[in-house]
Amino acid sequence: MKQDLSYKRKVYEKQSMNFDSLRENPIEQFRDWFLQAEESDGVDEANAMSVATIGEDGFPRTRVVLLKRYTDEGFIFYTNYNSQKGKALLENPNVCLSFFWPFLERQIIIKGVAEKTSDNNSDGYFETRPRSSQLGAWISAQSSVIDEHEDLAAEELELEKKYEGKEIPRPAHWGGFLIRPTEIEFWQGRPSRLHDRVRYVLQDDFDWKKERLAP
Image (spheres, rainbow, N blue to C red):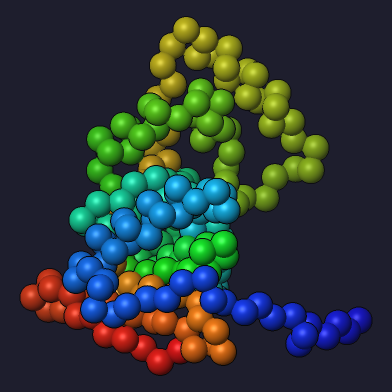
């Protein structure tokens, strides 16, 4: 089977990026762009991001998760520590995050190092989740092979009865990762593929170096 996609292309011409007008701190620049994406009618789930890790087999693997918090320290999401991405990050904490907002013709690429968040942080977020999601964290042995006829709904009902009228505790195998960025690139689509690209690189003194990249 063969399909030629060479004719598929889009002209990017909605906005441009002025190097001098960008903030000196990339977290602040991220905040500006993220708020614009959140307020845009054309962006669905602005906090959806790709997370790329290196697996135990040596291959890269990318999947989409939801950013749940960002601070001056970095970017936080939550997952099952026994999942493929959880194991990968615990074995090799080097990670890449990326946001793509087609409606705004923008993307952000973040290189960083992952670490577990504190138990208090993970507990605090877990308590905000709907009870069904809390139950799911207990039921799903994420990324493991399961029997094709396993009835997860029945397991959920049984667990729901167990915790009826009680708080559901956070499983020890479930929690947050904080990604401390070392490099952040902002990309703005432009006509003729002459895209605007600006990269921030963390220096040894913890200041950020801002530089423009060729498209």
